[in-house]
Image 1 (cartoon, rainbow, N blue to C red):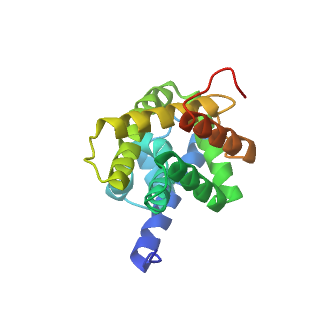
Image 2: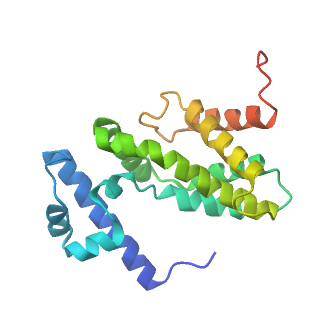
Length: 199
């Protein structure tokens, strides 16, 4: 993979700064009381720059930076791998690259989502988008159209099994080894046809 150029690195730093200042303000004065203007001022950017990176205040919290990394990791797996095995390896690759600071930020982000009703409600709609995203890469790897029905069913089953594998459901995933192991086990069960009653 080609390393990001200077422009991409600067954009990534600006995006990270906006999010970090936003999260600090949310912690200090509450999500509802924090405005886009306050976030932009704290991050030393214009309001228009804020909206180039995040369409809404909600998106500062809800945007998941790991999703594109996961999709690319699955896309990069050998073409002859079973799709569920490719997904497992993609998850493993992303988890291996996540720093402790990123884990801390993800825990912080999830706590905020669970504590703000409008964020929690909108996060539920993101699961449909996650199915679309995963179905697209599964279909691409199989050489079928993006709206292929089996690809969509597989993607939906994978997203559902990963959510079910989290010890606390969708609440505050820690991105730790135990959760990773649970997700791998869930995918193994899914590939085996969910042999109920056997462990």
